[in-house]
Amino acid sequence: MLVICGRNVYVNHYLYAPTHHKHSKCTVRTNTRNQMEISGLDNTGRQFKNPDEMWKQEIGDSQKKVDWYRNGVGYWQGVEASMDGVLGGYGHVNEPDINSSEAFLSTLLNEFFPNAGRNQHLVALDCGSGIGRVTKNLLIRYFNEVDLLEPVSHFLEAARENLSPENLSVSEEHKAANFYCTPLQEFTPDAGRYDVIWVQWCIGHLADDDFVSFFKRAKAGLKPGGLFVLKENLARSGFVLDNDDKSITRSHVYFKELFSQCDLIIHNMKDQKGFPNELFPVRMYALTTETVKRVSSSRPKRHSNRPGIIK
Ligand code: SAH
Image 1: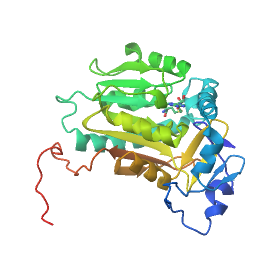
Image 2 (image 1 turned 180 degrees about the vertical axis):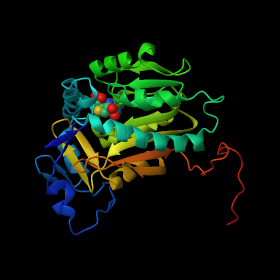
Image 3 (image 1 turned 90 degrees about the vertical axis):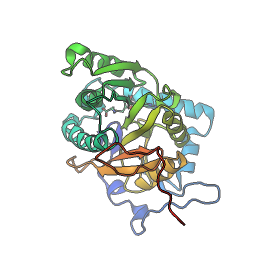
């Protein structure tokens, strides 16, 4: 068994040739109750007809839901505050991870914030930040302020240390500003503070209802024209429940259904390259609250009058 970010990766037929989908393309059908018909598995091989069946088992009453989140955070409380710790023993994927994220982010910044670095003060939120790996290696170089949100206090303390001015090699115009020791499902950002909300390798801890309500609340935390970047493991189809760390790995189809419930639009997406084969595929999504025309030379005029289409 191999583990990344607490998600157990089974090098067996479940993930790589899932028997329940071997001969059929996984599609999501939404029935009259708006219930997703996507089948899934857990790490003991148990099959679920659909997410509802799994969520009923895991968070079917309020005590179970408390336990789901307590066990999720509890898992990470037992993990060392190090690169290897937050990357499930795969510290060496930090470099390809950051390189791909940087390529993705810089394309987005050119497109959305062409004045960044000149006169635009950019602010980001790093969700489920762990020890501040993504902020330290990437976000702090592009954003003037980065806030970190992390429910595990020894990770957040390590982040505070890693990002203290004496441990950073960026100018004084770039700093880690606020450290919030809170889980995503309980967090409401300050209105209109962020240009980018970065969510990497933590959304699997959120049940679907909390996923949707988190993004709905977090939208109000974006500046006009701001966006989310979600970077996550992908199940090849359906979903995979990890009973050890209480997280779920969703498929692209599953994510798309949740994005639509959040009224979020996939502006752009890119697959991570260069990770060991035994790991889940990883995808980066840029999510916006409205359709954004692709303009790279100047700031997109999303809020001005546009020529109307004569129908
Ligand atoms: N994003 C970081 C850390 C990934 S490890 C990185 O890429 O390096 C997964 C992180 O999710 C851990 O720090 C864990 O504490 C955090 N996490 C677990 N449950 C969470 C929740 N409910 N809300 C926010 N973060 C959570």
